[in-house]
Image (cartoon, rainbow, N blue to C red; front, side, top):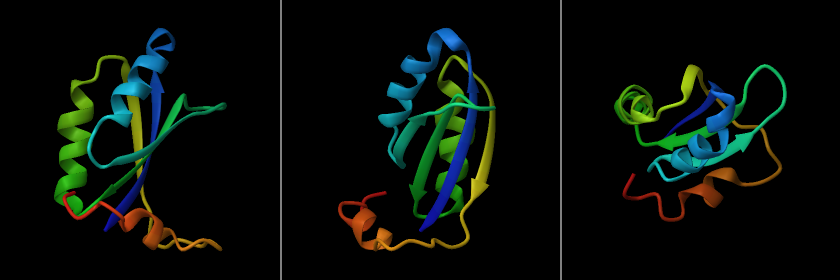
Length: 94
């Protein structure tokens, strides 16, 4: 599984609309409205790099209001929680 963190700058008037649309995209597990340099942060969990590429360069590109993105790949998770078990439920079809 490929996990990525996608940081976004979004037109101020479209933050809620873009966040809701992102949350509906298959492969996006969470979307956060945040303070600081970025407006939204999305967590993507997909099977492989090709699906991540499709998500970022095709599906997200269709959303009006996203001005800039920065995508980071997660190499390893450090958590007290078993994140793989939590997020593997129902992800067979991703």
